[in-house]
Length: 149
Image (cartoon, rainbow, N blue to C red; front, top):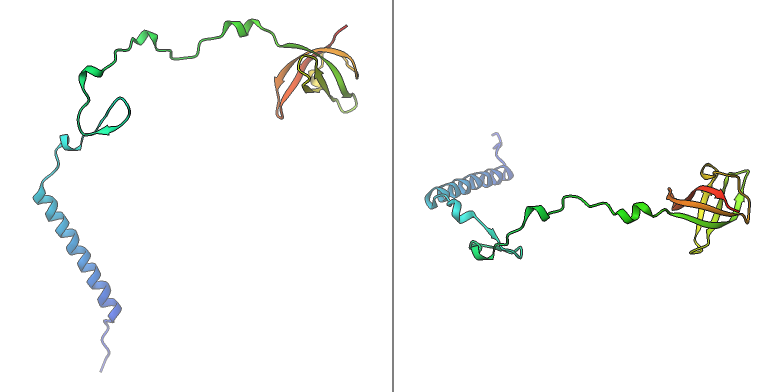
């Protein structure tokens, strides 16, 4: 006699599949009998404080905004354009062979990196210089460095 091809595991899987199908059909029938929800039932309103509610907001709370007063960009600051950032300092370290050094600002005692490409005139240690600062890869760098008298 030949053994049955259907094992216990196969029977269980088939039962689960049929039950899933029955549940799906039941849910489908239930949706048909209850009917579709109306659009008004699905709407949610947001009040002026950002809270969600089912009731529409009151009409008397609306604020009138003049579209001319809305700024779409940041206005230029005229004062900053006129101010130049020329600073004075003293060369604390400079290696002409390697082409870099450091300048100490006299106004705030900050030290700025200076490269040979940023020099306008040759400099040496303890020279008084004027310079501008510019953002570099690792911080602020001194550029347009000139020796002052």
